[in-house]
Image (cartoon, rainbow, N blue to C red):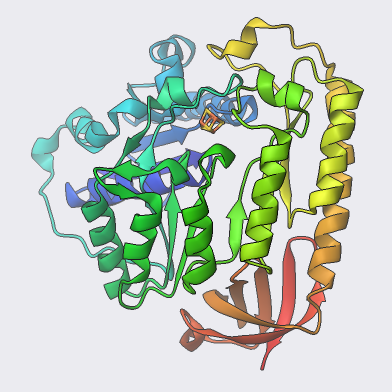
Length: 418
Ligand code: SF4
């Protein structure tokens, strides 16, 4: 059985696809070298944003055509989109053979293998190839029910995974060359498994031999504890970067979003973080055009962005997602207006990002090499910025060294080894 996995979604989806791939390999399946060589094509698609869902629909449309030419290919849809739409997907795309929702993650590989007929497969021991940077999922689901978000409906309530399993996964990765662990979860800082909270989990991971860096995402401001800030400030292996979604700076909109914090509280966290970790890079998410967002609300968010000066931000135009609370309200900000607000925020944020990045020119930054391609080193600073360096080879992979920054762009820096 040759399988091909297509992922449309966030880092969580990518990570889950990777795990599914390993599980299928262990069942005796093989990775298909191309679309045409695949016996089973698996689409792991996100439905959190309508844009991702539209992309997934268009991919399924292409698969419908492909199945006309190769009728024995099996098409499987897994993940959030499968959970949200269930059998409706089959009504729209007749070529889909199997739909497995995000709440059934533990049994996906077995169901796929059964679909193919597992009597032809022989379980085998696989050698997992580890990268310098390894993503580790520590929890799934969310209890927060932000009024615009579909995640709790498609992924279920928060479930933290066993601390022992997470640590074992990190140890195995470290023994096989991984230098950096990125802990992933929808609401990572509310992790709690028995008596291990997120701060304790981090402390255990930084003590693993050969792990040199630890990062985590995504955080909810209401769960950012003093303990976690303290661990970021005192544990040298915890990177000085935090992604802390603000969404809006208008308290009226934050309340309508059910975010459970005020802008003043958020600002307090920023100041605590900057006092404890002076060089911290704080990044964020913003939604524009939320139902009821007036020009004044928008101006408050824009002003906050100018004041806080995020390292970078992701800005999204609000769109209704079915089943969410706010979808019952009228989506009253026009698309034209959403686009205008989106472009103003983007312009301002790009201006700030380039100013911050330019201020790093001439400085020395410690980077970890993640990739070397055609003599170009791709490395990352502690603060999460990508740095390109000319003149490297494979021997640099996984090493940390100092780089002098020579040039800055919005999303990347260019430097030379000192
Ligand atoms: S915290 Fe809110 S936005 Fe984030 S996953 Fe949970 S419900 Fe969605």
